[in-house]
Image 1 (cartoon, one colour):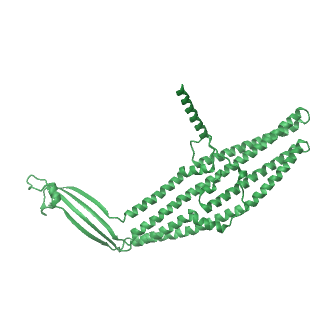
Image 2: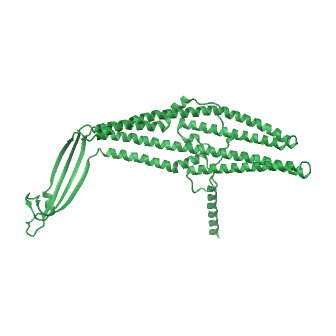
Image 3: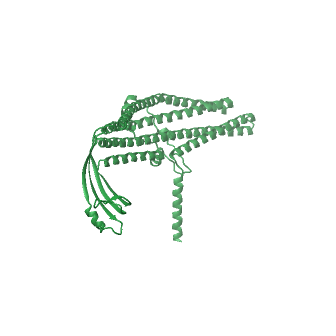
Length: 450
């Protein structure tokens, strides 16, 4: 009996964990953390970084000596030379040779060293590009998260409008039953309730669509009841101070990886130009080799020959060599590579200047939009406060029969518009502020709201 009780307890605990997992509300931090760990695009960018790391390792190993072993086996027919006696023979023979060769470049115009340096900078650029992909992903998810907040805010506002209409319909219906109001007025309120229910349904669908889009951006497949945890927007303070474009740009240019990545690529292109020029210089190579082999005449009247192991020992020879290569003409290949490397370098310089201009423009627009948004948000909040008072007055007059349904509906619509505008301007201002803060830190923890 006790065993069954313990089994039941464990089952209940497991079910409670499963239900709590399904009912989890995702915060912005949860969304960003999950995306960074699981986004396919970011994983592909990490593979590009690993490729750059492999290229760097390869260029470093190119400075080490090469070591190669070779062997061959031949069966000779007809006229051939006996390697043991150096005499011409027409007898069938078998030969087998072995060689071990090693060489290293003593000088190649510093092409290898410059290639290593270029690959080091390309690896650093790859790491910065990985950060760029991550930052873009974070900002995209943050923007969609705020879009969900806005859609849910519209849904809540539409529900409030529907509740107000239903309350008035209930009141009018009771008055019609007692004969204090005409049936036509009830029909007018029912029409208003129907319109508000349609708006609420549309707002629900829009919110659901926004949540689905966020889920798709996160690439979630096994979370059927995905939803976000809505923060208390009333506790999020709006700063009344603006931002200075030049100050933000100076900080962002040092923190964000957008410029760093191209700067590293520019340094890499300079080293690639130097590496290409290195192939104009003479190349000096030193090496050594060990040779040995075996030879046997296959014939009934062949003389006695040494054994396989004895021949390998006796035929052993060594060599040390130095090779000097002076490039004179190579079908324009070296000059072509130098010219292409210079073109890539010039293009990278232009990309860097263009990226600086783009970054400054984006920051300038972000600062201007935020500074202008402060006034817009202040006006929207004042308009909302005024419309709340106006609607309360119209509602009391409607209940007293001093205004008709048309005036009441117009006042309610105006209040709804003021509520949505206040929500839009606040969320828009918050997103712009968080985006600017992200530009000055490069750390997504500074844009997390719970």
